[in-house]
Length: 121
Image 1 (spheres, rainbow, N blue to C red):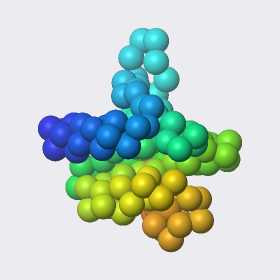
Image 2: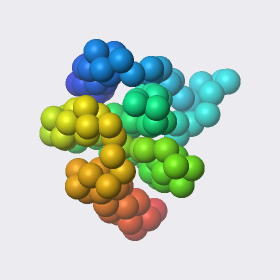
Image 3: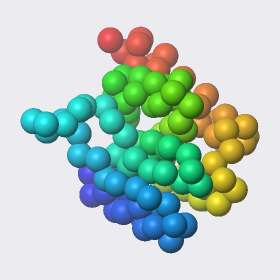
């Protein structure tokens, strides 16, 4: 968990230096909604949800479905692992284009997680 929190702080610091508005969302509490991405941001005028995971972190089905709902609402939604950090940073710096190869690959990864989680039930 500590590695996930330090990675998340690194991403939030990067977003601050990029001039993005962002908040850390703590889900699962009494007055919060579960499944909401760790970081909610407005980057270059675009709504972006970022679910941060440690190297071996596993998303929940609710997190995957929430990322999908964000995309369906014309936002961008990323499942971010440490080995994708540099690609994420370049994607942000280039304006978060929805047609970038990295972003399309990230969406494909999310879909693979969804299939895997369905079979684990």
